[in-house]
Amino acid sequence: PVSLRAPAIPGQLTVENGPYVVETLARACDGCLNGEFAALITGPVHKGVINDAGIPFTGHTEFFEERSQAKKVVMMLATEELRVALATTHLPLRAIADAITPALLHEVIAILHHDLRTKFGIAEPRILVCGLNPHAGEGGHMGTEEIDTIIPVLDELRAQGMKLNGPLPADTLFQPKYLDNADAVLAMYHDQGLPVLKYQGFGRGVNITLGLPFIRTSVDHGTALELAGRGKADVGSFITALNLAIKMIVNTQ
Image (cartoon, rainbow, N blue to C red; front, side, top):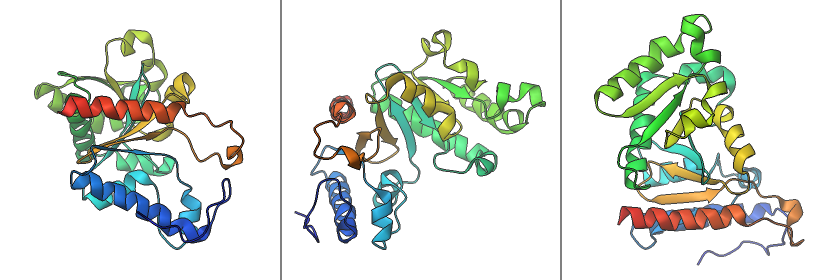
C-alpha cells in the first residue's frame, strides 16, 4: 500500500500528498507491466498540486508513456457512438502545424489502427482523417499541410491496405453520412475533435491511452473539488471507463 503524507480532507488540496498521487500511479503502472493487473482505470488528478509539491507532471498519459517506456502513445476519447483520436494533444495552436509531420502521422495512424484491431476487436478499422486547415486547405489556398504532408501519408498507408478516408474538412466530417461508415476519427489537434464528442456525450465519455503495453482507460472530466462530500458527483464516466476496460480485456485474450 501507498501511505498518505498528511490526512486527506475531501475537497481540499494538500501539497504534502502530491507525492502520494504519483506513487499510486507508479504502483498501478508497474502492476500492469508485471502482469499483476489486467488493466488500469484512472480517476482525475489535480496537476497543479502535484507540481506544487515539486514533481513535474503534465498528465497521466505522459506519465504512463514515460514509465512504461512506450515509444509513442495516442490519446483517444470514446463514447458508445463515437471515437476520436488525436494526432497532437496539449500543444498551443501556433505549434500544431509544425508538429504535423509525416513521421508523426505514420506513427499515430499505425497505433490507432493496431489498437482498434487488437483492443476493440475491429478486424478492418475504417478511419476518418481530418484536415488541418479550414476546408481541408481548399486545394492549397488555405494552407498546404494537406497537400504536403497529410495526403501523401494517407496514400502510402492506403497502399498498405488501411481503410482511410480523408483529409476531410472537420466542420463537415462529423455528420452521419461519414460517421456511419467509420470506426474512429483522427483529429489533428485537441480542440478540433473533442468539442463534438464532449457535446454529444459528456459524462459518458472515456479517455483511452493507445500504444501502451497495457490497457488504460480514464474518466473524461476533472476533479470537481467543489462537489466533494455533497453527493452530487456523476459517476457515469467512471463506470463507462470500467466497463470499456473489461471489454478490452476480453478482446485481447
